[in-house]
Length: 189
Image (cartoon, rainbow, N blue to C red; front, side):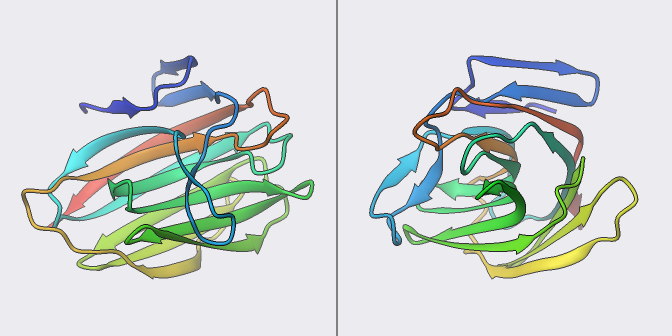
């Protein structure tokens, strides 16, 4: 599959279709908006595709979220100024389905309350300049649309990186354990 790490965590392992990560402290992906800082040191395990490729990525995420902004899910990335991350984010003691879209160096953030499921299923589909993001709560949950976002269409010479991401931005964190199961990325033709 030719996956590689961007900001490899100190502790991680793979067993079959399961990837287990313990996030490093003070890691995040964010650009400027509202918080007036930039971080590009979160963990991202990805494959590269042609920049104009349509594709669908799915994964099941389970985490032991304990600290403000603990997070994990899927990521699509062109470079440090153009990326999308989606998944679970821990805010005020609760899990939220979360999406951050960063285009031209500016991040936005949207959340949907969820019932702290044991597993959050994610499905992200990219077609041309649009990314359709869906989530499902629990093993048997039905997928619901969370976001339809603009994402720049690049030429074939610029790779699109797609995979799993996780981070622990909190000031008082020691990181947390997160498990990704059944990561699947399919090129759509």
